[in-house]
Amino acid sequence: MENYSQKNQNYIFGKNTVFETISQNPKRINKIFFSQGINFDNKLKKISELAQKNSIQIQFTNLNKFNKYFQDCDKKLQNINFQGVIASVSPVEYQDFDEFLNKKTDSYRKIVILDGVEDPHNFGAIARTLAAAGFDAIIIPKHRSCPINATVEKTSAGAINYIPIIKANSLPSTVDILKKNDWWIIAADGQSKDNYFDISYKDMNFAIILGAEGEGVSKTLLNKADFKIKIPCSFESLNVSAACAVIVYESIRQIHQT
Image (tube, rainbow, N blue to C red; front, side, top):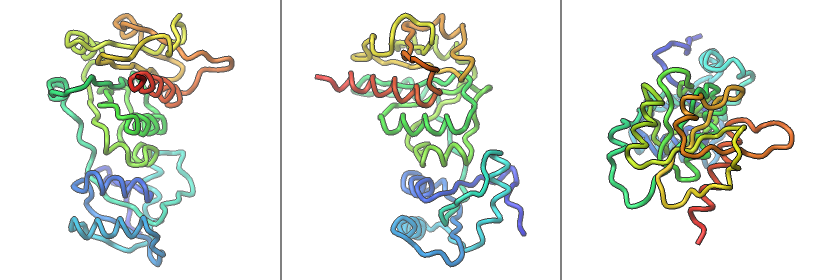
């Protein structure tokens, strides 16, 4: 049986993940593998049609031979349900920070900075939330960040293709540059006096900094923040992806409030 765990290979799986990727960024798709003997539902038919439209090679095969590759990516994956489709893909391309910063827009922009978030499930869920909310980018550090692997792509349900991701050599330096360019910095901090709904997100470019669970945002970045906010909790703090959704949609509510 062929081994699909080589480091130079990248694969994604699941109907929604493959469909969103081929819909938004078909050039990333190198080849699509369908399970032998599968009955095509509407989503699989659309994937097949888009593959043919974009001249992407299709192969019918036993998908179980991919198990080792995905389990090497994420040890938590067991008894994987591929939903009948896997795609060989090129890596996600990172957005250049300077290009993003200098892009001319007619509206204020909003981003999230992840400080030390290394769990792929959280990263994927955050990307999905931000894409759905219409955020403009995610900034991650070069070190102490999560690689964009199959788990991230699956958890994001393909949303990773809809939001630019910027990799920064230094988050403190990146924040300094944002501040010099009239961005406001908002850091999540459980010890803050202000709740996430106490500040205004309207009429400004802003970046929300979220830290890893258990560690939070680094002191260096907290000291650079213009606002520090918390989510009031009567039990335990939310995980970072849930906290992201709460804060992000409060900002969206305010922005669209007349």
